[in-house]
Length: 115
Image (cartoon, rainbow, N blue to C red; front, side):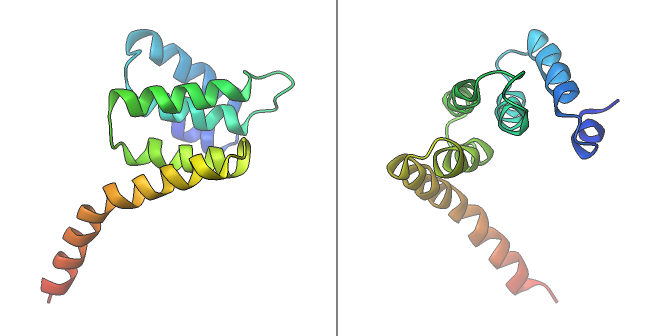
């Protein structure tokens, strides 16, 4: 079963197992690290990895790919809702907005020039 299918079916344990298997062959893949961080947050924490691993994966993804919007967004969420730290949540949210601004401006240009 594909990762997206497992996610949609809310089979987060199985999805995490698949991501962990993929990370064995590609341990420095920011996409997989962000996905792993997100999945950890969705698991039942009596049987899943500790929440701190989500933070570690997200920070590692951001270290490997500075400015990664997915990692920035998830870190803002993590520090806002999972492990509350308003200063860190604000920092990552502001970084997200700063990094997203050029893409938003490009999209606005495309929309303004569209017939």
